[in-house]
Amino acid sequence: MGTLGRILLTLAATLLVASAGPASAHAANRVVPADRAQITLSFAPLVRRVGPAVVNVLAQRMIPERQVAPLFNDPFFRRFFGENFESPRRRQDSSLGSGVIVDPEGLIVTNHHVIAGAEAIRVVLADRREYDAEVVVDDERTDLAILRIDTPDALAHVTLADSDDIEVGDLVLAIGNPFGVGQTVTSGIVSALARTNVGITDFNFFIQTDAAINPGNSGGALITMDGHLAGVNTAIFSRSGGSQGIGFAVPANMVRTVLASVGQAGIVRRPWLGAAGQSVTAEMAAALGLDRPGGVMLSKVFPGGPAERAGMRPRDIVAAVDGHRVEDVDALRFRLATSELGGTVPIEVLRGHRTVDLTFPLEAAPEEPPRDLTELTGPQPLAGATVVNASPAVAEELGLSAAARGVFVTQVAQRSNAARVGLRPLDQIVEVNGTKIPDVGTLRTAVARHAQRWSLRIRRDGRMLSVTVSG
Image: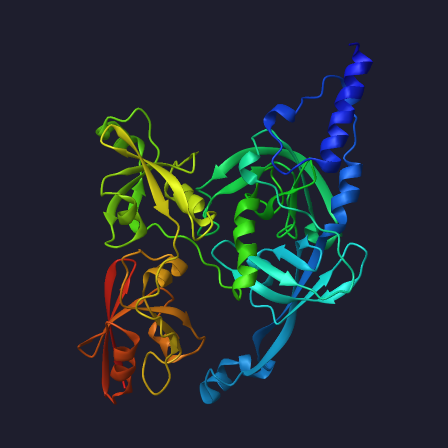
């Protein structure tokens, strides 16, 4: 076959994949451009097809601020009137991000941080039509949110790829609204996979790309060459605030699990391990006689949990889940989180120097004891704190140890008694005036008693803090 024939054959194959190829196209179907004619092929047909599915997301918030008359900035007047004479007011603030339509009936995926705290959300389609949007799912742990708009028309949308089929070196397009300038398309390659040391979300397992991603691209689409959603652009690594060639996207397989919660009242439920462990480092691998670091060594297996019933033991090293290698704790959490509840999944563990194949049941963490979510009120130092009973389910949601028990703070209202005491989210309230606090009911009783002096014991990041407050 001559050069022209090879070019035509490659072009035909490329157009066929772009127009109708499945999301799980294998590496054997991918080709490297053979000559200049192939390099000049355009992304335009792909952009025309997927561009209408990428939208702008406008989040409107009311920001509290203090209004102070210039006269009262004078120290003389502050001496007589004190520091608390400012009149509060609120101003409207707007932020602009991106989103991707993933269902023709109006479901849109974006980032949690794009819509966090918004009192109103407006979605602008590529053809400039505008709609009010409601939040259907808001999952801070994955930094994903699902919006819904009502429209009588079927909308252009993008289907999800199997992000496990994506390889380093694959071409991708990033589509979004950087800096609010309007829809913009940039191209690049997948420069790394399974980035787990980024520190952006609780489930660190990102696709890395050098396609230019800038502020405003958050929630936008990372598109494969066959027109499917590889991931949702979420963050960049930058010293200047602009793109420096390192961008991160939440993989489509994680997006799929969050989408599945649309039919579950917006509650994202994930399988849990029922065990605690740590990543196997190079030092640990050398001490254990392993040929390489990687995997998760279990330090504790909780009685009756899925890990115990699967046959796991302390000091087992989880090496693979459903055939995918597990390099660290974040990778293990991702593999479980993207597995479907209700079934089983094969897990490979190293026990000593033997490989053991186990069948792991995919179950949600139990909510026992019930969470009893409560906002504390009244003339006492913890007023303004929202507290919850820790359970395996709550621990999973808050990112606590699976063994955590007791009463934990989830929120602290601004300018509340609890805020003035210095209470923070994830603090554990251990003791109030000598009373041990095993659950929220006991805490409610303890703070309902009148006291001239309050003695509190708080556990924070493994340290015990003692606080004394006058009544």
